[in-house]
Image 1 (cartoon, rainbow, N blue to C red):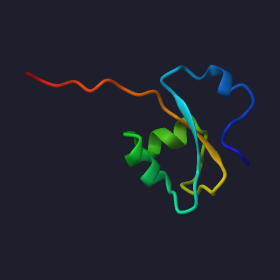
Image 2: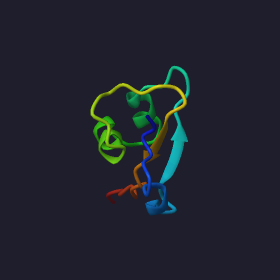
Image 3: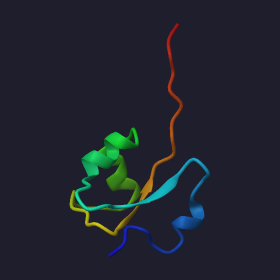
Length: 70
């Protein structure tokens, strides 16, 4: 089953995105690539396990500004 459920895509902001899982992808690899965490990906996509399959679509969390201390 796809991670995107009815109504989710309409709630996306311009800072969020949807990606398609590619062969060899894992939640860990996707989290690193998109500067988020496995836990955040699981939460926003209502995943109960760490298992994803090629072809699934995942919602990415909104990007967060990076704060640099002087």
